Image (cartoon, rainbow, N blue to C red; front, side, top):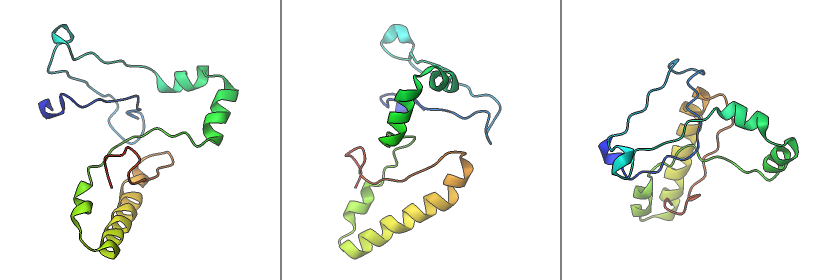
Length: 119
């Protein structure tokens, strides 16, 4: 979407071979020659396979995780009652873990405020 022109898409896995379309397509609305539009495509499985196994073990044991999505849930801050605010957070977390998580063949965590921009 053109509205996401300033949005940075970091290293992630499209999982085009798992429960989604067989192929993925990418489009850039601003050519790289105009100061944008470039992106990197890599084989995530190959990257993991090529990594030193001790490094992978330490990353896993240190619970280093990849952020797969930032959900804009800043509206929760507008809820004036802390108990209600926590109930909304808990309800959204339960909904996401029960509805979204089963669609992915990976562990999924939902952490509020991990990037500092959401409550």
